[in-house]
Image (cartoon, rainbow, N blue to C red; front, side, top):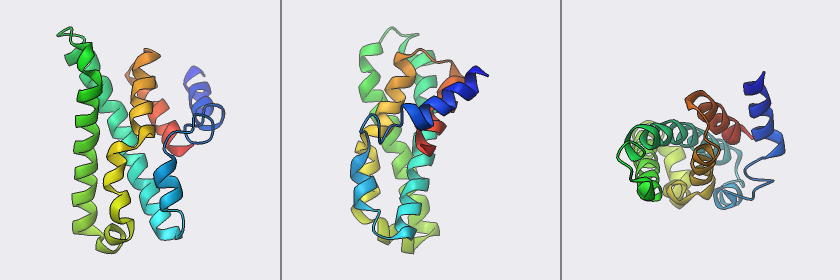
Length: 142
């Protein structure tokens, strides 16, 4: 039941866009056409969920193990940038129309404060891996 409460809290109560005002740029910039808005939404969901999982693993098994938590921000940015690059290459190869429609907003996911914010929230609240996964997905859906 705790995991369900966490999901509901992240989706409705602590909504990352409406309550915490993170990630407004892509939301406002690509919401003119339904197709590009859906494409950007799916890209952000993928990046946010994957970044939440990977950054949790990097923090738990690399940064804390080596006692270099001060590198958290830099390492998280590298993870997020790598994921965005993967999404960009995938869209360019698979869905060129959507890739062209997203334009400059696709690489801006790298600097999307919602993605970084969700990753940092997962770490600051000391979530376990499953909780980090659920909160990342719930933030993305919310």
